[in-house]
Length: 112
Length: 113
Image 1 (cartoon, one colour):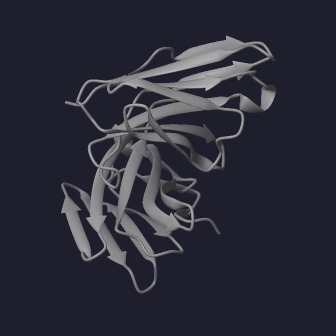
Image 2 (cartoon, chains in turn brown, green):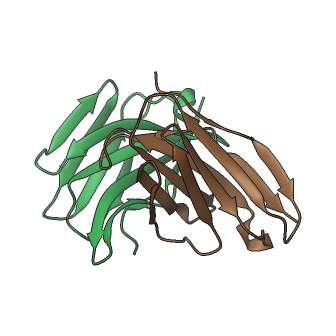
């Protein structure tokens, strides 16, 4: 079974802090994704990566950056956290871009 | 409405009844997927239907796709309390900026014992 893990289930940070969210998948998938999920808005794609060191902006990339130095690891970075970035962050991976995505358990980030 | 929008937003049924959720989308797609999310957890893939397919089954799940109406439905038969979750449809979406993956806001299903 595909396993996608995220570094933290719950995280509390202060405004202005730099935040790293890490995601690791163990199935050699090419594609990895970062979403945020907010009530009533569903999942919104922040960034995705289709290969090591390659990244593409999703629908809401502002205020975020990503890093993919190794195939199995995709990091989401909040350079200067703000309260409107309080959300559930979900990472996913897939073998092919248009097909089944496998999700991690999510990180609930609160920015005070 | 946004690409990939589920209807209804919330649904409450008794155990044993069937649950039907709908998804509408705006642009042409390659495939449509349904996912389930238990409270506070990640999403789990349920079923994928390609644009050239009209119906697909998986256990108690039945998905239909009508590309002429740009809509899909997910039917859960003989529902159980364990089916209580949020259900999302997801579509691939191509625009001038490239290809993207879009989830709808979801349908919250409550199955009452």
